[in-house]
Image (cartoon, rainbow, N blue to C red; front, side):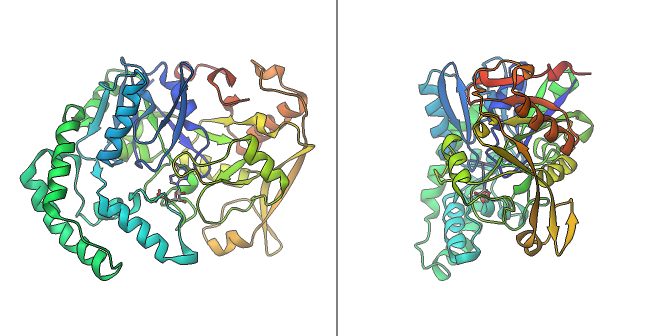
Length: 430
Ligand code: IMP
């Protein structure tokens, strides 16, 4: 058994952190392979709440390595602050490793992210403003600065001088904003480099060594499939590849090393930021789910948009992500509703479609085709096994499995670890 990938199958915030934390209990390494501190993973360890943004959830066990892979973008200042916070709560961070090839988020990336999105007016993406998109843009444009560059002042100054000349011109001429000072940035980022130096390695060598030694490596995706730059609701997406395949590129391992992909979903849908959302609810059912499910962004605190579970979306995510299993969270949030709805298809111009259209205009025009199932009024937050579920809740789970064509690995009836029902040992599953 080698690599397991955990991915979000909706628009992020599906509770991947919790599932990752479980699977990682028996792993030797946890690798983040894309995104940056736009992600927000809430994890409870020994009764303490941790909100991780850049740090992989593998950090909580000193015998396990927690790796920030080459596909990630790193804000050194935010990362150091996060590490400090974790250390303050009594957790060592010596087991962290950061790829020397990961790209660095600079203040100009954050500023341009915020200014550019605001300039789009009604067409804004609603980014987290953390500079993620502009950093990946620079990576693709081959003007990015990598973690390794922070360790060499001469190279850093040279690269930064080139890139800053253009960024400052953009800031001043397009956004009427004050420029950044080269030497101030060099000094600040050289200092970050020195602080992060003990963690910086060629993570591809490390990860592949672990895999070759038959150690258990867990790849942790951030965001979700519908925010994937290729397969998501473009342009309302993030700038990286949260899907299962992203793990190969963002961690530097071959696709043959991935043996399982667990797609994580909530029993309903939530979304922060803008973009189409066919099953969105604008009524009191949506408000009720938002309140009971505490649906407010970890990073931005924004209220999340809420909707019914959309199996068109989940089938799309399962297809492109190669899901072998599904984890369904927050089933308890649906308790007490008279009926629960599942979108099984869409209707577009009188035609029934079962796939997610590429055209945003089409997505905006579709009407979800719902299957309405009887709800359950029982409190399920204390159940310990699948057979303790009320019949209607079990029906709901079974129907989701059928519609996605992927079996459940876990389901959750509340936020704490004990409230996640694990159906089998995924590392030893035949
Ligand atoms: P960016 O990743 O900051 O560029 O934002 C692009 C889109 O992805 C926006 O709609 C964000 O709200 C969304 N997004 C980014 N990270 C997350 C996340 O961790 N959870 C949910 N949505 C996210």
